[in-house]
Length: 376
Image (cartoon, rainbow, N blue to C red; front, side, top):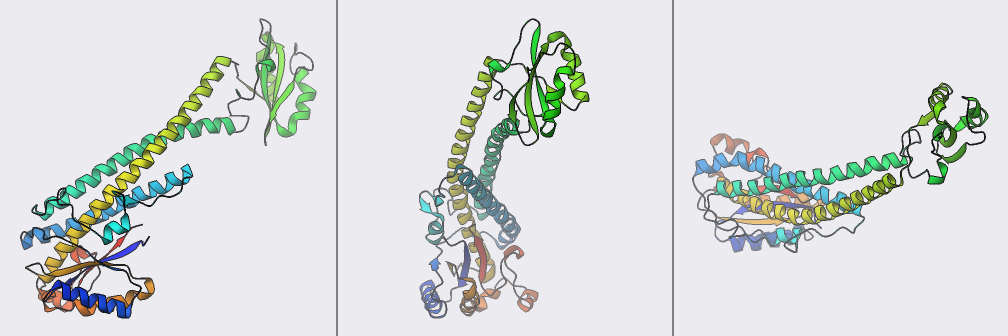
């Protein structure tokens, strides 16, 4: 998919078809590999020059905003597809690939009546895109919250023995709990295991001889059990701490372990469900944002063409996608066709002398209307 297009309008002296034929001929002659398409913009309601001028700043700000939401949604799709390990789908607008939607653009009269004032159309587009952005924030926050819960559980399951959850490492037969006896879990530094085995029986009185058993070992620590009389447990904890051994508080409960397992399964299912629904929502919403953006670009081309060439509206709008090496040749062709006395219609003397800046100051400075549409 082509990722960068120029939206261009050229002044029309006699007929748009003759300008189109000349443009096709010149592009074919000087840059045959440059895709070229008509950008079909309807006759919109012009309003007054003052209304167009006051709209110009809004158009620049709104374009940055709408393009930003489009790119933000696209990045979210890329991330979700990567995490889900699904093959990237071609992004579409109502089933039409986005680049085809641009190059075969058709104005949606039902959604944006052409008799509406331009500002009303722009405000409507901005409102729709802003709502999608707000929805995106809420949905992503909900998804990230579940991800954070699962990540926190995974950290507990995979961290060092000093901090991780021990429930999946300890079996019922490893623990002795009675009226007089208790089994404690000791976290022993990996390189202090010999010291532990040599000393644990003497850390306090009433320790069951040879009761310590290693259950697990990671890169830093080893997990040992030790059984002793309940009444000396506190003394054993104190003596262990003085020797550099940590006694972890642990109470085995098969019911709690089963509940924990079910909770993890539920969160995993919630994450998968939210990720799938968010991805589908992003596919749909990207299409809506892109459609709104292309209608906005059509308004922008129309408004700037009026400001550049004057009334009545008489211009040819098109989109091109030149390669980097062909840009200068294509610009030269467009400059030749854009050279028209009409292009000074709304200029002041200073602008005529210094060169006309694009609408709002962000479009390229040429004798014709031109700005770039970055799809990705």
